[in-house]
Image (cartoon, rainbow over all chains, first blue to last red; front, side, top):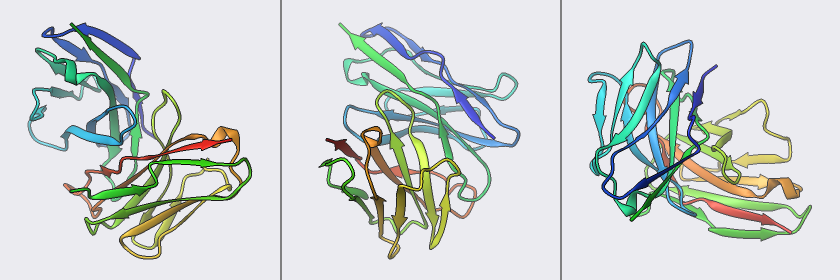
Length: 114
Length: 115
């Protein structure tokens, strides 16, 4: 079985400040890791993913996440947030089997204010 | 260009009245998933299809059924909706087949209200 823990349910931050959203996972097998973003009343959009290779992955809008196997973490960071980054962020884990399911964390609400 | 389309976006149904939510995809993906997401909670997988093979999660209530008549379409049937079934229902697809084919593409969701 696999699980994901997002300890922070809400993270308030001022615009242009840095932010880190924490994600820890548990799994007995190798995993893929994902961050999804959800805007109000919308579906989930993939933000970035780790499948293999470099442990630091980046998105096109300035987010990055680093896979740390020893700490079983995949924290999401952005050096300078914008108002438009306000959304719910979900970390997800998937074991490396064929058509295996995504298991989501409970989400972190990022609230960016002026 | 929408790739995973869910209809309707908002659905109101009466307590106990059967309701069907639909999902279509233009990606020709092998795998289609249905997730239930209640307010302020993580999406929870109900079941998925790998081609025509149906895979039900162990804790999915019998009240929830699914059909996949072809590659492009998948339906979620709730036979007797209860108040506790009010949620956002998310459809997703993935190519399947192993490494590098794991990214899931989500639709916009259908928000179900039970009155």
